[in-house]
Amino acid sequence: MGSKNLAGISLIVMAAGFVFCLFLPENVWTFLLIGGFEAGLVGGLADWFAVTALFRHPLGIPIPHTSLLLKNKNRIVDSLVSAMETQLLNKESIIRQLHKLNLIHSAARMLTGVMARKRTRQQVLDFVAEAIAKLPLEKAVEPAREAAASYVRGMDAAGMADRGLTKVLNDGYEIRLFDYALGEAKKWVQRPETKDTMGAMALEQLSSAKVGGFTGFAFQAFAGMVNEDKLGSMIQSMLNSSIDSLLDPYGEQRLSILREVRVKLFEAAGDQEKLEYVRGQILEILQEESTAIFIRENLEKLREFALEKTAEERARGGRIVFRLYAAVLRNAAAEPERIAAWEEKARSRIVQLAEDNHYRIGQLVRDNVERMDDEQLVEMLEEKIGKDLQWIRVNGAVCGFLVGIILSIIQLF
Image (cartoon, rainbow, N blue to C red; front, side, top):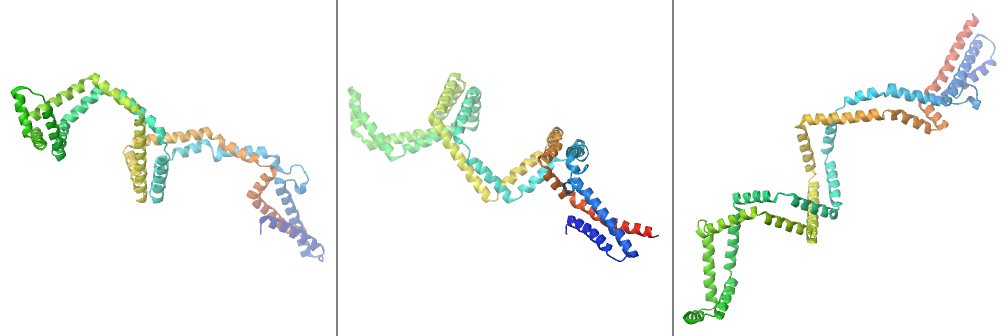
């Protein structure tokens, strides 16, 4: 049973009891009951009037000093706002509590718990994959080309060439390249078709050569004694022998060629004109349409590779996400001074926001109250405090009944 119904029932009981006792035979008990019910009825009606007068006009009659809440709506709102701003949620208490916060450590603990969940890690990877798939790579071609061109224009060509040459010579790359070229040449020379080709070319040159005198006679005689196969074998054998001598690490010809190669490399590294020519050629290549196509194709390959690796990692539970997160935490923990500085900056920022926007608390309360019409405001107040006020009516009726009996006893004496 609701308190509002109980209050009404208590008032009805007092009224019914009073009327009923009027028809009872006159005696002491009837006198006491009439006094009790009469006082209870008066107390219940008085409290009903008082409670009702808080919210509206009793019985709709505009009696002075009734409907107090609506008449004093602005004063009540002002008092409520003032109480919240100066007492309940005053600026100093908010700032004092904010200064006690340990924002970064609390956020890290919360985030660690979240990242420990497999589903969360997979969602992070899903988000990453979606972002990668939506990257507008066509818009990245020109910036990539411009970045490369800017780097080429600004680089120290002489310094880079010197460092590169030093690296090449220290690691013996010129020797490796020389040996690789000789090895490929030897493979080519040893092919049967190479022997045939060289034999045919040599025989053709011998046949067409014009040499006079005794030397020409001897030359023609030699040409008549050999064929393509013999000439090819002779040339193949000579080339193999020459290549083998060049592959000898201590061969004089090999060392002489390598010295000449190094001299040419040093000359090229110090030739500013050639370096600028190379720079210009690179810049021209970067501006070609084929370069843009090359960049776009490789960006697409990079995207496919990233999506593939992301999918593989997701299937494994996304542990790489937690490892990366843990690595960030470890790096941050290694610099407590920086963490303290970040903490102070974050706390100061929040405190500043609280100071700048504290007035909005009261403004929010005022706006919410002003958006409600009178009926809504009364309904809200009755819903929040009306139940307790109805008990005032019940208590008024009961206390009035008891006081009435006590007064009747006093009258008897």
